Image (tube, rainbow, N blue to C red; front, side):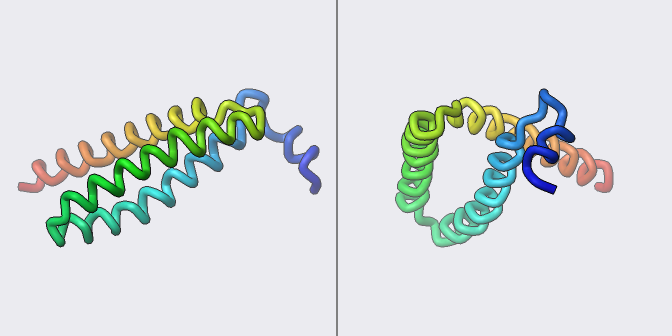
Length: 105
């Protein structure tokens, strides 16, 4: 099956770019979670601040603006939407864990 056949099967409202970016955000989250736990266990606030500011700079400035110009796709908008959805999913997951933990106690 070639790409044009796959595109015909996908609904018009669905964009694969959202899936790819959401998957990338999830993989980055897993990696950053491990690194942040290690940095916090070492009590290195300066290193954590540097990492977060660098991450924000790279995501917003380089990825969003440069890719938008290069590809002609508004990746910044898509990335921010995916980050918002991912953050909401994490919030709901942690709230459910909290409620279930309190219900068991």
